[in-house]
Structure formats: C-alpha cells, structure tokens
Length: 152
Image (cartoon, rainbow, N blue to C red):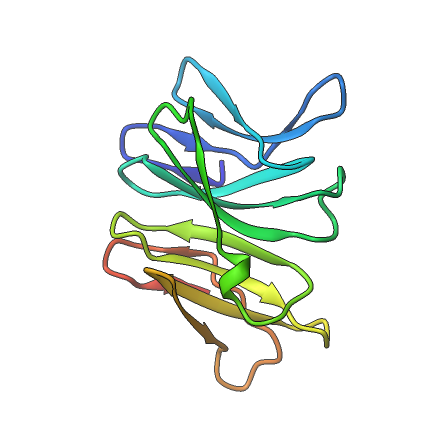
C-alpha cells in the first residue's frame, strides 16, 4: 500500500480495468472507489484524516510521460472527487508527482528537470518551495507528516 490512514483507508497506486483504463483508487476496507482524471491516474499518498490524496495523472495511457502532480479531495468516500493541479504551480518540468499530503494540506513531491534530474517540492497553500538534499544531483520528497517533516 502506498498510503494508509489510522482507520485503514488506503490508496494503492492504480488499477487497470479489463478495458485497459488505469485509475487510482481508494479502498475503505470493503469498497474500492476508482479515481480517474485523465487516461492514467495514480494515487501515492493520503492524509491521515483520509480527506485528500496525492498523486499524478497523465494523458498517456501508460502514464510514462506528461505526468502532472495532483491532489484529490473529497474523502473519505471520494465519490465526487475534486482535482487540484499542482504542476501548474511548479517551475517548468518534464514530469511531476505529488507523493504525500498532511492534514494541514501541505503537499510534497518531486518534478523532473530538463537535465533528467529531480527536484523535491513542498506546497503550502499554493506557495511552492523546491528543495534538494545538499550535494545531491536529484532529490524526491516521498511523504510528509502532520508536523511538516518530509521523508526524502
């Protein structure tokens, strides 16, 4: 599982239907709710309260190019999801993914530079802060807790 809340609500990447549609999903323990924005949607994290998930979508059915960092709110049922495009706030990039979100709404993730390297980011209320681990060529932030600590 990529993300799990204290009460067991999970996000688990994506599922592929028999028709070849790739969608993220939320699992409540008894019900799977597919989450689809474009041809491909993958969910990578969910906040502890289960109201917002982080991930990415792409118009590429394989999800390999044109990755766009997003958040999806509307939990815990997510039956009418609301998508927020984080990529539009980031510096110019080739691909981006949101990987974690906390209860205060801070989102973390990473974006790919033209060089092929990655830069991590934190998004607090639409204010983007890119960051790199000192001395590294690439950095990816993978999660954030409710204290605002990032896992890299």
